[in-house]
Length: 360
Image (cartoon, rainbow, N blue to C red; front, side, top):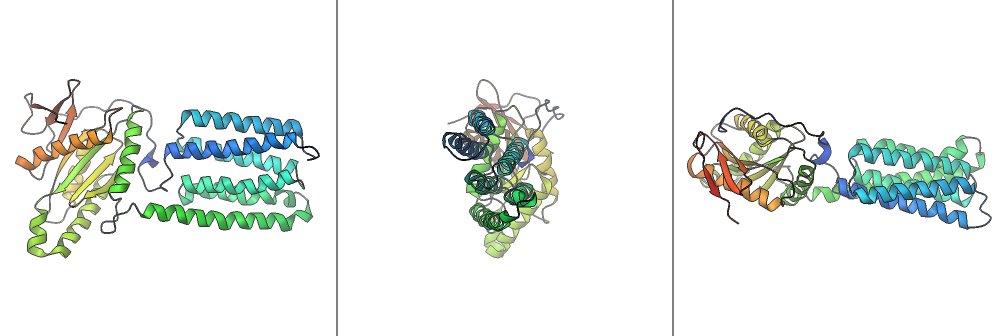
């Protein structure tokens, strides 16, 4: 292990959402989820309040005023917070399903009931766009049952229209889900199967947002040692096989919620919601999983709240460069003091103050 000194105890932080970095739809960020839920609730609030102004609808006006106002308040709160954690997202979707079902039952046979039955479709699109297939399935199931509630509770004439609405919800949800995931595949590196540079940038933005909450976060730039020699002496097929093997080793060594991405060429960017020293430990595990004769050098750094992603990767790149100059096959951990000096901690810098001013 190339990091010097005993590992510092990580401070206690709020729990980290493990879905922040793992494979989810492109729109499954905390910010995007908040935007979609706020829009959904605002639309349903407008519908509930509008029906109170239309005469002859045969609806419970006090109930619809409460529904419209409630949806509006939740939409305003979600829009103001700008972020929704996973549990908050699921709570909002379940709340919307319950209220929509109540309206469908209360206004059965009216245009409002049909409108809210179709509104279940917007709910499933939000669910399938912000959750995994497994995470969205309970919400989709509730949305399919919602339009059928009047028929289930005794209105036999409603079966035909309710079945049509549920069928449209199912088909549209499947289509939307596959389209969202097709967009996600554009972020996958075809050779290694890990996220590509585009996917890395998006996950780095997520990790930077996570760091602002006080949670630990770290990145590592990993560079294969002597990769050009492998390509030149054994051919590009061997080089491709080595890249795949390194990607597998990194993914096996860095547990969830860590994420391995291909930064470009023979470089990988590893992101983890953990302390830098802990990420360095994971890289040591990954290094032992590489094929015989293969090795990599790595520069690790923590994320500073409010710091841009480019500054973070530049600091990791500086640590990686220091390793490649003198100690290939090891890991360097870089930190930043309040003065802005880059501090490299490794076997050759232990025991004395080895700093250099961080460049632009």
